[in-house]
Image (cartoon, rainbow, N blue to C red; front, side):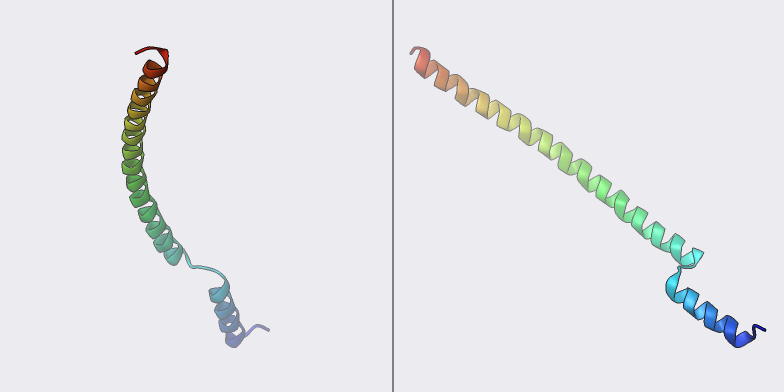
Amino acid sequence: MIDKQDLTDLQDRFDLRYVKREECEDNRGEIMLNLHRDDKRLAVIEQQQKINNWLTLAIASGIIALVIKVFVGG
């Protein structure tokens, strides 16, 4: 027969192996909050990268235009 000691033994082993629902929901909430913060940061970085790419393209096209002008004519 299974007695109280066996049940507490099993529960202790399960607690080491598995996570309870409340703990899982807390962990999931923390992870979702961190992901939400990262999404905001990535959106800001993406916008700055777009601006940087446009500026680099404008500068590079100006330099290429000057080089072509020097080699083609005057």
